[in-house]
Image (tube, rainbow, N blue to C red; front, side, top):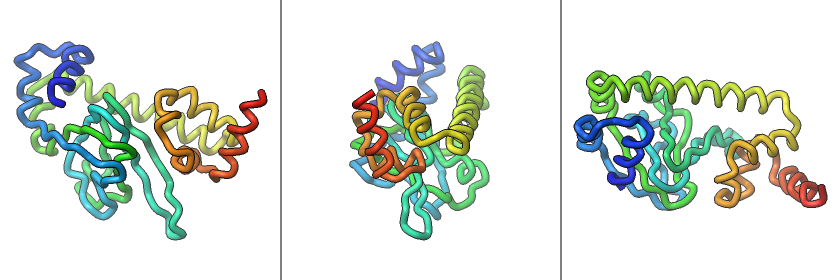
Length: 192
């Protein structure tokens, strides 16, 4: 697991080995089973998470029991509940494995020390945050202004690697539409 992450760091950040070693030494490998919680709503998010393999979903459960998926994170992506992590407040979302997942975690203090001592990692972290802000803005605009068909088309365009790996009810929960509507859209696409 750590060797795959080392390769990712070498290729993505072009970090030299002497800068990769401190990142690896504070890493905590974690294997998650399908549906296993990494973070439960009400707990404080204390780790940054990198996904080596598998998929994590970030979601909340409404008062009526409906699941609302905020985000899917898959291979070579980072995830956390940013508000809980930054403010050290109880999380309002759950993070769970959609399928068996290998992840690497860093405690907040350890990761902050790495950011302070490794300028390239700090720069990369800021770029990731900026990209995530942009993606979230685009997702919000799509959610409030697009038709269900447009939402699904957007999801397919932006997440082709996830389509075959996610159950339809999770895609529907992510798009904010019913499973029945998603099934109708997919059926109609077969005849386009």
